[in-house]
Length: 257
Image (cartoon, rainbow, N blue to C red; front, top):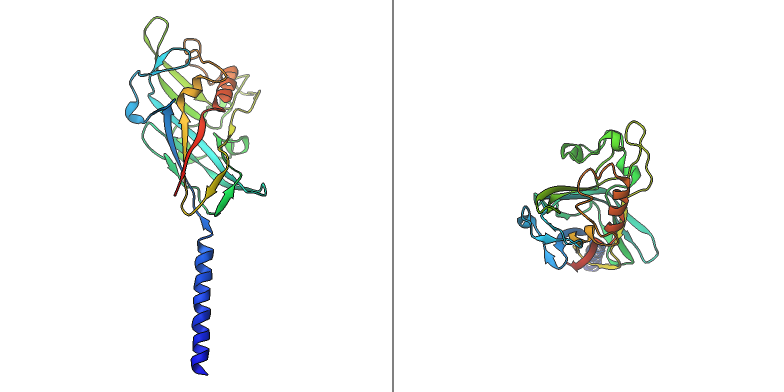
């Protein structure tokens, strides 16, 4: 009788261990890896500070600084439920920092209808009391007279202008603002949701997301750097053009374990 009870106890323990293992393997963390290209040519910070790119308008240019904010990574289930990871990541290509990001928390394994993130901050996250200390120390905040909150992107470089001279540009994306000063107004929200499409999540999945930098100057607005190169933050029309061009910038390049 003791032998039978012992066998039953061992069997139950084994079943419990197997159940725990299955439960542990039904959820996973997902990492997002951000890579960059100019059309089909990969771009890293080793390519910076050299005039070697040509935009859609035919202007030759360099990249000297590129950093941008993503937030609220979201996985949409087959039942159209959204699993939202609150949080953000400042991707600093210039210093090769935060190119990979693993949101805090795990999601169930399986196929999702869509994975998405916000480029920049939505309005609620953009304005919180005290702000974000790490973004403040990185000088990523926007002056109060321009509406406050934070940049969505800082993209700086030089281009060869119409007089064949190297001239600086500051392609900085923020919330579009008018009536600069104590009471600014906001004609249009210029953060945007990036939809990457359906994905199948297995254990320790890595999503590689590519930014095609050339698209910031390309579609639907062919950017003329001779006309729009600096003082773009207080230019609401320019910010709306950036918002429109940004719709085609990001794509899901690969899904790997």
